[in-house]
Structure formats: structure tokens, C-alpha cells
Amino acid sequence: MDWKLPDRARKGRGAVSNRAGRFEANNFEAVDDGWTREVEELEQISTTLTVDTARKVISRNQSPDVPFDRSINPYRGCEHGCIYCFARPTHAYYGLSPGLDFETKLFYKLDAAERLRKELHDPKYQVDVMALGTNTDPYQP
Image 1 (cartoon, rainbow, N blue to C red):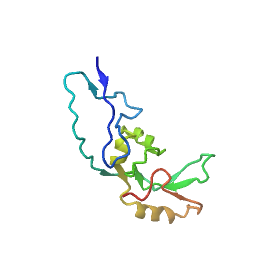
Image 2 (cartoon, rainbow, N blue to C red):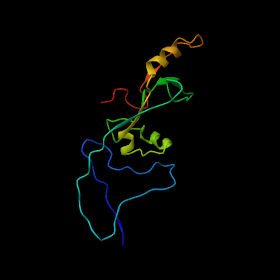
Image 3 (cartoon, rainbow, N blue to C red):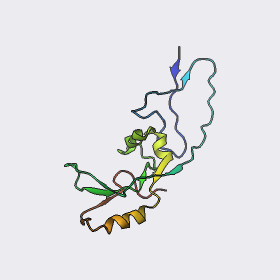
Image 4 (cartoon, one colour):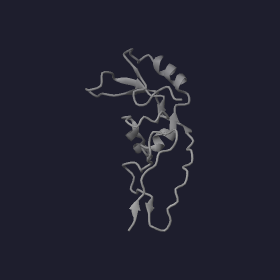
């Protein structure tokens, strides 16, 4: 009989698993089939940075339960690794895990300052309250 192997913590990371996102068709798990059971040291996972090609820097929402209608999120993902973070499931929309992928695969807006300046100088823009880093911490380590 095969038994699912328990997830193990990696030094410097909050999540212990890297399960597939909820929209993925396949999910893979390590199992102990009884042949061998060597406990090996888990390798350190390095963080990768990928350019986010979003068209705008200012995100808008029309949710009645959120006290602002616009925000700036310069990153997707967060290296802090807070296991309770409500933003973790957003990585599943990109086919990534809300576990270790959320902490190790960060997306950033390369020319965010330039695009923000352009959006703020648009004659149609109206000044209002704007939140910074509502999805993930804007100050990454």
C-alpha cells in the first residue's frame, strides 16, 4: 500500500507544500511505496523575478465591501512567506501553487513608476484615495 509522504519545511520559507493550483487538471504527490525511504536534505529554493506585463499600474475595483476603488500592487507573490496570507490563492490563476510558488515566483511591474506617472497625468484621471500593496506587501526583502 502506498502512503502519502508528509510535507517538510524548508529553511527560510513559510509554506511546506507546493501543491498544484486549484484550476489545474493534474495534481502530483510524493508517496512511499515501500521500496526505499531515504530522508534527504531539502535544497534551498531560490526566488525568481519575472516581469509582469500588466497594461496599467492602477487597479480598480467596484466591490461594495472594500473602502477604496483603486490600488497599486507593484508585485504578485511575496517572499515574506506568511502562511496565513489571503493573497496566496491568486497565484492559482496563473497555474502556480499558492504554496512555495507564491513565495519563490514573484512578478513585478518593470516600468511601474513611469506608467503610474502617465496614468496620473491623464486629463481624465480624478484624484481619490489610493491603496498601496493591498494584495501583497509592496516592500519585498
